Image (cartoon, rainbow, N blue to C red):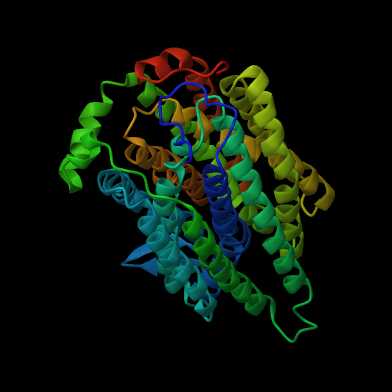
Length: 453
């Protein structure tokens, strides 16, 4: 007979972990391995520069596109597409969380959204020859599916670890993701570098990279879903209303937890900056720094490798100093990264790699510890619903950063001013998180605080 996994809000987990729970944790880790290639190979490395190049080729002499009568700078196209995709997630993600909590069919939902996103990503193979609008539509579908699947995936964390274990378990998941992302990016780097010898153009090699990222995501999702387990639905969740009425009810209930909302606000601010740097760093490097695609892919590969140690290392620091303090320290490092990026010399590969290494050290830890810290602030039985709003802060409202980046470039014509404009998000997020009484927030949500916060 196995021991039931700790429930959300329970006290510190007992040291022994039953075999079924270990197996399920490995399945949970492996989904990070499966999905991370979308963030790395698609959003961060290849699609931004490639779709920008497709848009430039299709634009007129003034380098502007026309969509529904609106004139758009080709250089801003990907940032606007990214913003549009995450605005649409605002409608989808909370409903996804509410449905997952009400039905308990998390395995089926994870599989459905992941496979839809993987299919759309694989279809990016056909984006070429001026098909800038097709690329935008496929990315919007893939990114919405990615966000919805992530909501369901995150909601398993309180079921898999007690309060004192969550920082470590979350950090291991991110580390798994970085290993998977690094492996596929390494293969993609080899393909791009050897494209000419293989009889391929760089564009054809990029299309193959995008398609194989989708195939990887879908294939490894099968393994993850086979190991994860649905949980019995709590009575309060089972009796919940469906659809938008349930969403409205949850929004009203959340007002009873103002400190949880405070954290979401802080996270929205600083994570907006994190997501924008991740998504648009390749565009900045190619358009402003004149770096080749092989350099960008190599830098992303290095980030993935360094981030494995960074995620695990910051997880250990959190066990000693608390997640909040470690996140605040990481935000200071992010501010330094953006200021340094403003002064990077054009074509300076070594400087770019040095900055990428710093990003690798703080990127995974910032996100893994934010995920685990938020799990302490969720009322029991509402995990997926609250992670729906968390994912809105993660992606669904992460349109402000790309929008600020795109508008700054459109108004000034300077990618350097566009990248440094993101400092405001990190400063505001730092101040908001620093002022949050985290231990009081955990108790207010009805949970038992871990030893260190």
